[in-house]
Image (cartoon, rainbow, N blue to C red; front, side, top):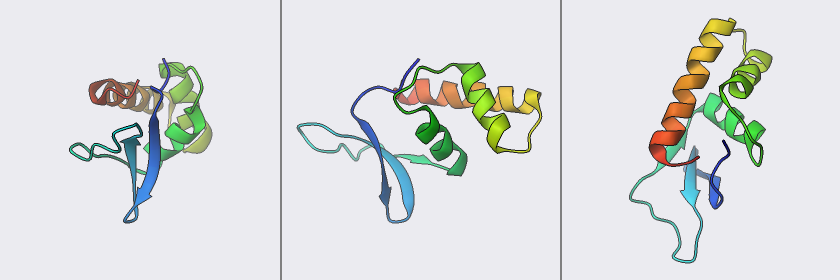
Length: 87
């Protein structure tokens, strides 16, 4: 999977949020805020194909976490991306 085109992360009032850029401007009826880990994953995986194993490896490379926890977190993160329509 890959992030849908047109979505950008912006720093708004100290929060990293995902916004859709387009001809009508930003729809601020739904704001998707990223925590530190989500921002790391977003930046690492931008413009790349990824799956649970890819996300898991980024987590293992950047955090002191066991493989089982990294896989569980990777799956949950991807599920949230799908729920929000970002992939």
